[in-house]
Image (cartoon, rainbow, N blue to C red):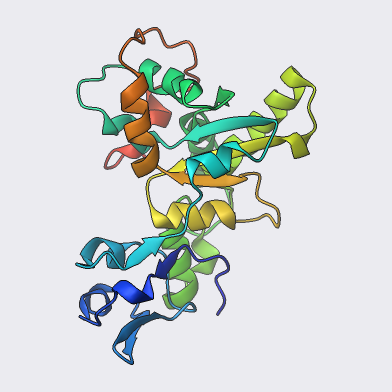
Amino acid sequence: MSIGYASIYLENEKCVGCTRCMQRCPTEAIRIRDGKATILRERCVDCGECIRVCPRHAMKARVDTLSEALGKYKYTIALPAQALYGQFPGVRTRAPILEGLLRIGFDSVFEVAAAAEVMSAVTHYELNYGSIPHPIITTDCPVILRIVRIRFPLLPHLLNYRSPMEVAARWSKRLAMKETGLSEEDIGCVYISPCPAKCAGAKAALGTARPAITGVVSIAEVAPRLTAVMGDIDDHERYAQAGAAGVSWAISGGQS
């Protein structure tokens, strides 16, 4: 079964065929052939476990660089994942992070957490009044979605809504078009991603042939750049759109 865009790839020259990735892969998507790891795309769910355990750093996630993402459009919106907020010990509010994104080159910021609050509301409605058979399985996590498609006959239980990152991209584009007068083709939406699965999910969003997200950069690249520019930013949250319910999706049990 094809699962569309794949984020994880192998840097062949670094691989020594140690089998650690193969042993830890939850969907048995890796084989060792001719002394090198081979990823079976029809089985891979982009969970990133192989990246975590590879001692040679041969497994990588395919993302855009920040310079690539910022150079494609006349106006570029940052879509920070909630997980970004936890990368800065001692930072008390989101204000330095959100304003810092403007300082490193983005034209505006739209919190994915704001879209998460909307999706929480519609999910609550579905749980109480909808027609999807229980238990209902969230499709916010691309790993869960792909595991269900590959290994478990639970498709009728999937929540058939777009993910918060895709909703945030569409929402923020509409606002930017109204504020700037630019066309949709001139506006980029860059998701700041915490994991390989989110990278793949952004490039191949559920329920749409044309995702609104135009680029994906990793938190690992963005966080150090933010640290360098946040020092003199006060705690006034000028650019915050989300409340605690949306931000809490990043913590264990937050979505529940």
